[in-house]
Length: 87
Image (cartoon, rainbow, N blue to C red; front, top):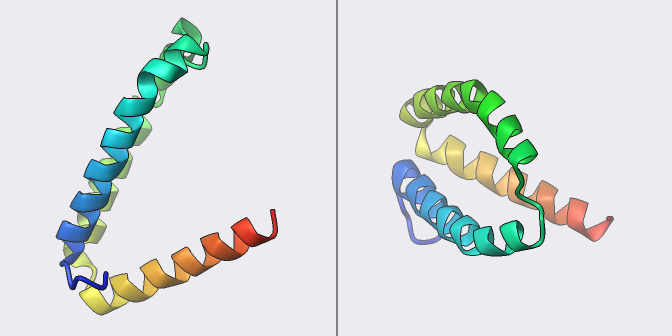
């Protein structure tokens, strides 16, 4: 946010970051048994929720103003930090 990125640039950068992190963790998750045929089956059932989330997120991204997005992002970051402090 301090770089002055637009909402789409900010979200796109974060999406790439999490994608790379998750791909890097994938071999370890398979090796440790966290990813199995059962968990992949559950993932298939969750695809409709993913599609709805993508559509809803795209709609919100196009309609939200930069100042509102910045405020919401800062509030959620603060809430996450407070949660981490007390757990």
